Each structure stands twice: as C-alpha cells, then as structure tokens.
Image (cartoon, rainbow, N blue to C red):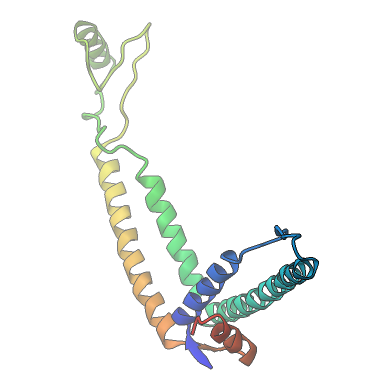
Amino acid sequence: MQVNLKKASALAKLLSAELHNTGFTMSKSISLDSPEKAVQSAQKASDSIWNTIEKIEEVTAAMFFIRKELSVANAKYGINVLLSEYNEAKEVIKMLQRFDTRLIHQPLISGPDELEQRIKSKAERTNSDEFNYRSGTAEVVVMSEDHAQSIKDIVNSKKRRLREIDEALLELNLANKITLSDDVVDTLREFEII
C-alpha cells in the first residue's frame, strides 16, 4: 500500500497515540469464593499482559517502520534540508524578537559638552529613557532606528521564507509516497487506524 508522506506522518502519529494509550494491568483483585473462577480470572489477567506485550511490539514496529521510511523519503526529496532551514528561520525570528525596538535612542551625543549638559539636565529631571544618573555613570540606550528597521526587515524576510517553506513542504509531502509493508497495513487495520 502506498501513501503520501503527509498521510504516512499522520499514521505514525496515530500509532504513537495508540501505543501511549495502551493500558497496563499488572495485578488484579480476584474473588476467592470459587477457586476455579479465581484460577480462570488470574489466567485471563495473565493472558491480557501477554496481549499487551504483543501489542506494544507490533504497534512500535509499525510506527518505526513508517518513521524510517519517512526519514529516507525526507532525505531523498530534500525535505530534511527545508526543515532545517525552517527551524533556522524560526530561531532567528525568536532571537530577534527579544530586542525591545520601542527603546530607540535619539541621535547620538555630539561630544563631551553635550554629554555634560544632558547629565546636568538629568539631575533636574526625574524620568528619562536616555540617561540614568548614578554616581558618575550614564546609561545610554543604544538601539537606533536603523537597528529597529533592520530587525523588522530580517523578521519579515524570515516570515516570508517560512511561508515559502510551508508551501514547498506541503507540495513535497503530498506529491511523494512511501510503500507500507503488509505487516504495517495489517497492524493499521487491526487497530482500526485505516
């Protein structure tokens, strides 16, 4: 059975959900009113553990078969490269958005006289986002409009690239297929995934 990469990824996720929703019963309360029924009940509980063990092996094997095939296809069709570029763009956006571009300085101070004048002026004012007068030091906002514009341009460019990559990934995931083994198809049917 052939499925496109998007469907294969969804099937692997459904198998993972099936695996993680597997219940584990390691002990059981058994009524001792009837020794025969107690033995049957204990045996049935023991058999369910064997069934759970088999299910875990079967579902895990099917899930990782699909993941391996997806990995090969991702390399073959360049999807892994696009995903890497996608993650890089996301990281650049995340890091650049840490800058608070609302804190933009006025044009830089022209020289020592202007600096001295601003420090004296600061002593007279209580709030300023340009200087913080403390024992001979001045805190200066260094984020300029040019910095803010550059950050905005880079973020917008990366966001455009993310949209392009999303489109390319969708096309590749729909256009390319992998072949599922008969065992995997049987497992998918057994657990009513397909």
